[in-house]
Image (cartoon, rainbow, N blue to C red):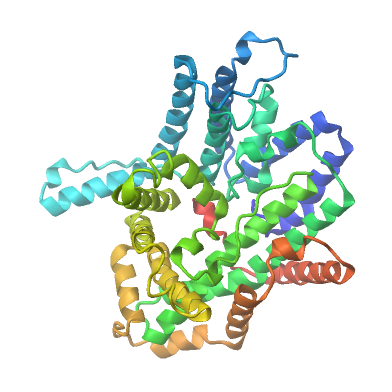
Length: 485
């Protein structure tokens, strides 16, 4: 089930809000958990069992970390001292939870990739007899990368003393499975919402802001991401393209992935507000960045912070000299790329970003780009990001290289260039691309726009919602990019 669907908007969401507000606090957690499992299991109910298993494993780890097995149910849950040493049992509980989560993520997400890469390497070496020819293909559970990181966040935050453990397994299930951010983020860290499971406010102002958030997010998705995605798919899937078409398609994909994901994040934040929860900001106008370092301080903030705190800093961060800092940056980005997808394209995408971030670090963030006037620095950074997005979107590494060659002025010959131009330069698509550019570089962020809702802003949000719903009913092309992660 996706947010931008008739089923969700007109049936699931109204039913959820009605049940939620008719129940007391404890009953609301039960209802929200069950409804979230229904939301997640709509496509494949068996994946709910995997989600429940991972939740129980991390809940048990949290109980052990806080020593709650030895305390009465009414006793206050202790907050671990961040500076005190951890016992063997606590270290084992954390390690067990992390290994369990990463093992399941590794199996479901990378089994097929590992087998295919192994067989390809053996074939290239001429060792065909050693290939592992198996008919077993693993289906990727929806959103497993997001909820795995979120579930891991619970045990990690308790271990570090950043949050108290949850005594109630129901609250733990509600935290992991909450449908607004379950399958595509933002990755809500436990320390950010722990207190909200004890008490939170429900006000008309918060609910109204949530509706405005949802309206803006749905409009981003339906009115901008989907038409830009149609252009991007047409160009990337073509047998060939000339230089102008290649640039046009790359820009279209950059707009698609931004509005697709930031729109989903806006809807998630809005749904959370409707339910009384306050989630963290996930995007901060990333295409206005003047360097790649700044880009990663603005793009997918919940993932950036998660990788920083749980991978980059534990590797040593910037505390062990320049060489080690560069290695840590590169390794973090490569693993971040692999987290996005089981493909060498994503490894290459992560390596490109890691290498460029390391270069900026070595140059003390004083590169040729950063020395340019602000508008030119922003333009150059966007062009660099465009080239990296090609590796994120292309079906294979050779196709990504071929696409970049076309962008650099070396297109492959193809007889259907006129036909491709007729498909992608239609007035509707040109209008949507222009609108997307205007929003990216000229419009206020949803977070700022909804901070204080006035009557004109509320009217604008209602108009956006109405137009988006009307267009949604007529659209046949309505994917969510990040659902595959």
